[in-house]
Length: 330
Length: 267
Image: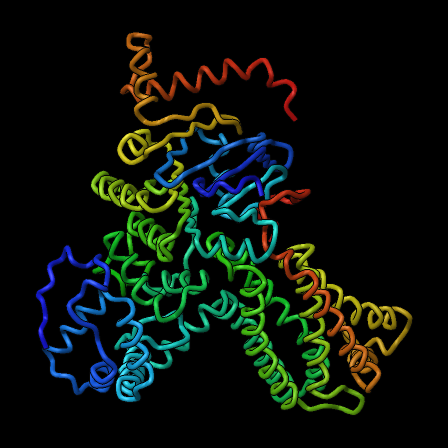
């Protein structure tokens, strides 16, 4: 094979003026790697300038298994190396030798929301400890009704402490990011529910349940529905106000009839008549119709939230603007 | 769409922002091309209001905003613009347990950066603000100036096309300010950087253009050189300071004199 040394200026020449062209046999040998190295270099140099030969060679390489397998292997090992150095999940954080599992878990909880690292978790644990302590230490038989009264309020407080300009130190930065709206609110709500639902239900199941008191799991659907309702309402009012309204609504809906019955000459024992509270809770929580109603309410709230999802973006476009101070407006 | 012209990364038209009864921005028309833009003005002039609207954190009460060719009317457009945005608020908080790396990585996650790329981007951003040796230190152990640099690192972690910095040099010592200005010039070669500041020397050293805002209106637009020229004309007019500072004062007074007669009709 003769090969005219090519000068840089030859690159743009018409391929007809080249001294030779790559034939099929040479393409095939190049593709399977059996072409001697100097000839391979010559071929590579030639195809830079000759489109016809370049097409023929790339076709031969494409249809030959050898290099394809090598490429696949290289790709797999590169991906493996990337996965090993960049653990998936936590925003691509590098492997830190000091990052033991508990520390990583703590960071995940931290990122999941301010509520999970602050007084809210302490309040949750105190409520649980107090309920168990009163029931078994003091023999108080109203522990489960009181817990059922408080249980839906606790996740709502957690949501209120998780998101928004008043609760989240990072809010001003997160509000300018694509994930800082509903996505972040839902992530943090899920974290709050993930901690509070199992804990409160387990404690409720441990408490003695006198006849007529709803079961420990009876609050789960209402708790979820009220949380969804608060989220939907927060698209209008902001997170803090919405959770406050819903929590107050639930508390008054349970307590007002109880206090009214006491005023009307009920059993009148103590500040809060436990039998009346248990009856009122049973009315709201026990039985298929009540639970079905909560499920329906939850689904409706979820639907409203889906419809209102874009109101969590603060768009600076045209529009009526906010009646609230921008800092207070979600 | 206001225009199909894509050379201006940021455009606002008739932008009005009200805080309760006070008017923070009053029908402002501005456009910003790639480069470093200094936003000057007295306290309460509306600099922060403008930056918060551009950062998509605050809602405008009227007018139009276009970022990177997106008119931000829809959810997708807003999300697309936000992915290419960097924002350093005047006051920002952090979770005290986070290290510098965790804090910047968390913001990278919020900005939806791909996980595989984020790790290296975090290290690069932290190195660019000169904190590479403190990357695994807790943010709460850092000095005020360092925390501000961490704030700059989180703003630039996604290599933003539009970078909004509200008083970034507050709390930096003179040496750090010099380094920060050279970082600003570097960033301005690629991105549209808008810096609000009350330090006229920041503008002189780092900015390619100057916008002066007063009482919610644009009082002056030009370059640091044109502002200095304005100041040079007033030699001996009894205004202290260097020529840019004098230019600033003269532009502000001229604007006040021009708007005094119309102030009564403002909402």
